[in-house]
Image (tube, rainbow, N blue to C red; front, top):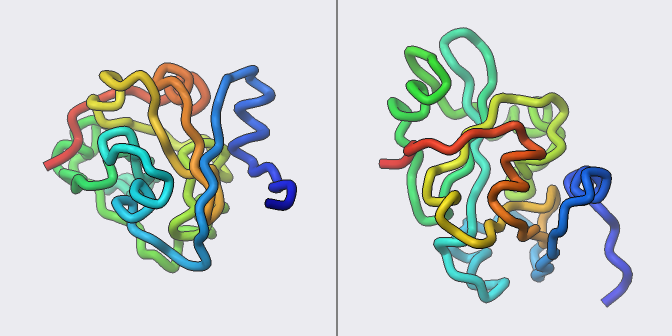
Length: 158
């Protein structure tokens, strides 16, 4: 395989001297998280997807949840002190985050949005999230993900 280009997320991890591992997989277009977990031969429980919402206040929030689960919008809103949050339209992902659908990492977005990671992430030795482009995932310690995103853990799934 040719030398892979580093993503913003990888550069941020290196700048912060955080140990991480990259998992590459063949991908030309959006794949759901369960398929990505299979493609990199990792358990679904360790693989998390990044979801971006907008609150009633018009602020954006990032939620990182296990790939097989669904975000509970009420719990998500409560975790960030909003009355309600809604998923942003797919067409707005790039303009809000700087990433594309299927390659949206919680690390290195255009702005540092408030980030909440599902509490199951705290119970794993390693957590896997998008590396910031299609075909690449990054694995690291959950506490390191908290460190670089300024995130918190909370119960935010159905």
